[in-house]
Image (cartoon, rainbow, N blue to C red; front, top):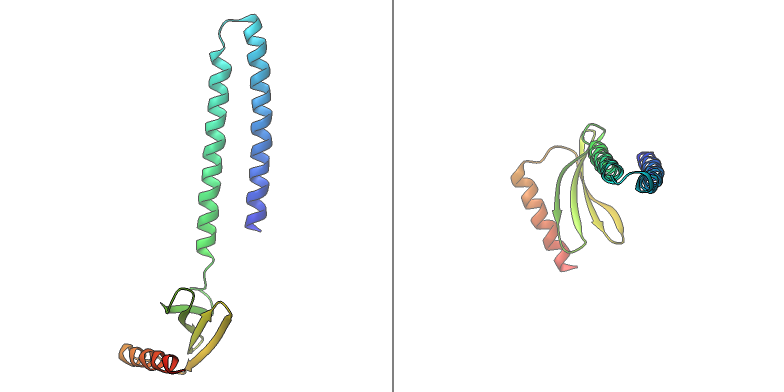
Length: 139
């Protein structure tokens, strides 16, 4: 929905800037025929362009902020920790309700590696990760 809204805003801004450009060109042509002062339409056109660019930058900033706010931190699933194992492989520790789930992520998909029913101590988790890496190296 946010992407559709941003696309509609950008297309509206584009149409408005095209209309403003045509009006500025029309005024510049008429002004060139009647008055030697052609700076006024040119300055209006540049001001309009700067306004449109500022609006586009503001919309991009707002869209970025909206995407950052849509994380799982306040919901049922929380990302506790993640560890990159290689170029495209990763292990992520998730908290789901009262359990912690160790998930392996690779280009071929995701899979639950282990379910921890209680919170492990940091040393226990480090030992578990070392054991998991040792097992992966063997296979």
